[in-house]
Image 1 (tube, rainbow, N blue to C red):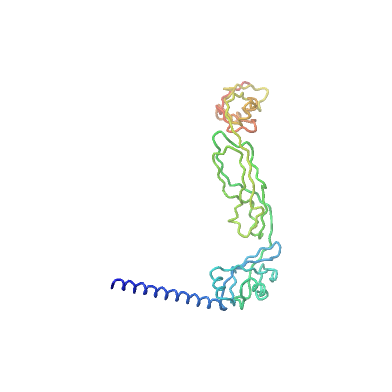
Image 2: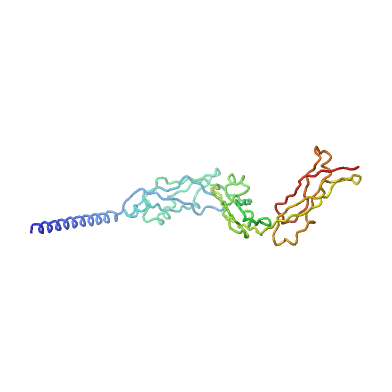
Length: 317
């Protein structure tokens, strides 16, 4: 019996505590809503952006924010404190001098600034907004593709790559662009390549502050083919030899190995390669063997090599 009475009293006590807490929470919320619904005059910071600057002009300013006292509701002020609003300052009303300095009178833009916020500016910490300006210059520069390609075994590119466009226009203050002769793309890496390469590459602008790029990306194309390898026996031609001189070469022919597109396997012949022994090299020769040079080979040949690379000779006069 006593146990039941104690349990009942405990439940009633918990209910009273719960009602008390709910009452206090509701009271606090009501007080907060009432307080923050009122208007206050407080100092607020706004991120600033410049608009309507004259053509071919770059604006630089140490002022990243506008500080001013505004009259607004507590909720609005609290919101601006945690989420600074971006407001736009009109450069077309600025005064410019010949030393690349300019100033904007914020009071002259009071109505525009008021329209951009929920509230009214009462005063500014600084009525004047100072900045530097530079007349923009432009020029074309080459694009350097920053790429590393690794082909699948038996595959290779067959011609020069193509960049479109191969140059872009950069514009900015003259002192910043005068020493720029090329731009780089973001790094691109590909491996096990077995088909044509084609992609768009973004131009890196991390180191190009206050410089505009157009366009900001380029296309890259390169043809890829399956390659095969074949050996040839090539007779060596003698060049630059006087008619009165006879030369005996040892050996007279060498083994040449070359890679080329598989689809051309029936088209590449011995006569497509020309290796030569240059008689002029014998005039100051310190050794009895002379290096062999190649002066003609098929356009798509790759990894051409021959053995031996030097040959001996005997001159008969």
